[in-house]
Image: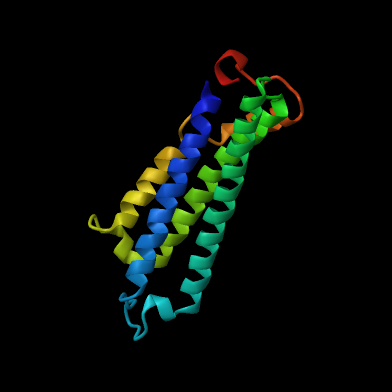
Length: 162
């Protein structure tokens, strides 16, 4: 049951993180940090933060999509997914959420104090992504579940989680 919610939650997380990246990129065009003459887009530390956030989102998205495609292919065979296949899907979704949270944190931090304002989409992104990290389907506990499934072990609470 929870597996069915894992990949959509991961996709939502990717959208939140992408929105944060888009918002900080737009802000970087004009924002000049206090006491500075150059904009964020001209600062090396911003370049690093942006590149790191984009890499987190793109790599997590690729794994999530590949896992969903694999699950779809298995579904078309008519056979039940193996524990390992289920574990990989769970881990891809949990990783998408964790990576999206890290990318959103990077975008929020890169924006500086401007991100705190209620009018900033970054403060909303930060709240939303951290709420999503607590969802049962993508919470940190899913790493244990994924590891158990990869080892061929029964998941904890198998009637609910498998």
